Length: 113
Length: 315
Image 1: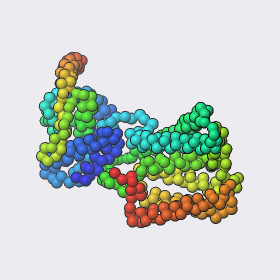
Image 2: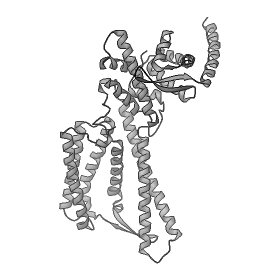
Image 3: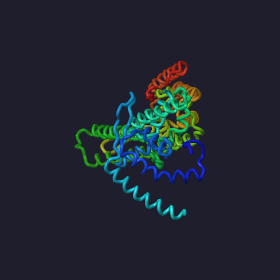
Image 4: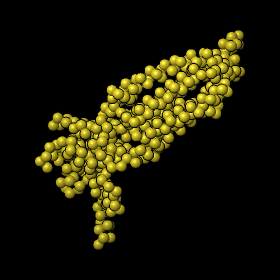
């Protein structure tokens, strides 16, 4: 679904909700290395996780305000860019979420059959 | 790209001031990256048309802002709250100064008397009472305005990036100006219709006071005209707030109201006595009439020459 297009269907909303939790984990894992918003979007996309920019960028700000990411402005290719990276707390949480994810995936896998 | 600047600016308008500049700068950078990448992949120009497509996918500014600062429940939102605080900061010292001036004037009536505790207590009581009444009226006005703005935003229809206002918008409204106007109108309607005794000069002698009302019963002849003017002014202010910007129509309506105001003043000044100190008060009203006529001329000039209605509201 493209954000802001039309009224989302129930499937779109549920699918979005399902992905939302996984998204935090994906972002924290990828941000073990420094990235700026658009490069992170491309990185996730290349690995098969498509995400709306309108969802990703505010998420980065929220994770930063929660003390999980650190950020810094730098000028690259003549353009100021805000680079993000997981801090120690963010990396610790990423490990915990990854363990949670594996456990959940195992359970759901068994349920689905 | 101009359209990206306008978009980032518009998103910023829905955000709390502490986030605004930073989020706007980041959005400009990210959206420019996105447009340039799409242009490269598609072999097309990175122009406003492509940018508009990217912005449509990104979402309407208020939706994007809500993702940055999800604060859906409030009586007075982040756009109006700083104005509300500023209004209180202006109102409270003025009230305190008035109460202090009245108390000091009261002491001059009885020069031999030392300041008594009763006078201080009464003055403090008057201050808190007036502050409470004014706070109530002001909060009510702001809550109504917030509601009008939210109704406008929820009835916005499909988002069209081409209709984004420019960053230095000449039709931008001053929320403070509109709210102050509504607040003053609320006080005037209350005083002239229900408490004409409030339109008076108050003289205090120590802890006692004497009230000298300014209006005679004959003043009632002008009430239908004044109420019509106030009603039209309230409707115009709410319409401007709901539209969010000045339009040619609302500017002409505002000018017409100013002319109407001048006509009412002229009728009062040239009419039969309706005040207790008629000659003195009409001298003051003549100055109001001159000010109103000059203001109408300035408004007409700004309208015809397409100058901003409220230059102080520009960002």
